Length: 120
Image 1 (tube, rainbow, N blue to C red):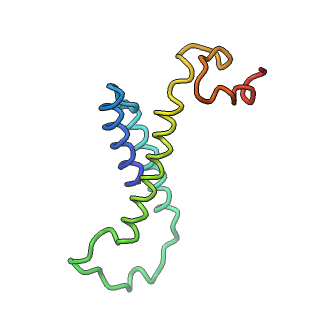
Image 2: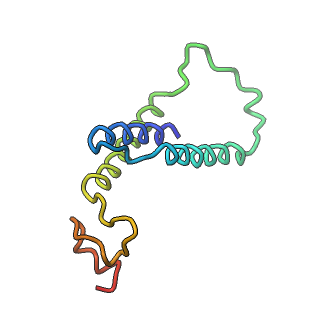
Image 3: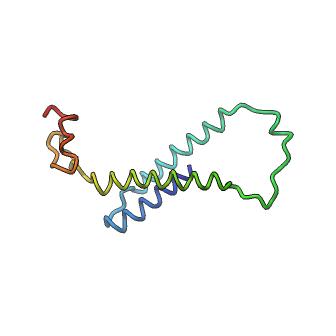
């Protein structure tokens, strides 16, 4: 979930700076958080209880919440998501305008793939 939040914040800030309008609205950010919280709570709720959790000693106060492996994975996954979203936002862009049919779209960088989606 932290990975998606990192990606959403960076996309919103960079998109607002570069495009003069954020690609994610406040409502869309709330939906992203709601969906990601739902998946996290489902993962915790469906985990079977285990007796070994009760007999395990507590973690020390000096130990961090996130391990180095977790931090590395979060950063790498966030970078991957940022790469994919950057390609979608800056390379593909707005292929269709609101209210238009898919076949009436203006030609874009991926217009040669148009035959796969329509009857052309």
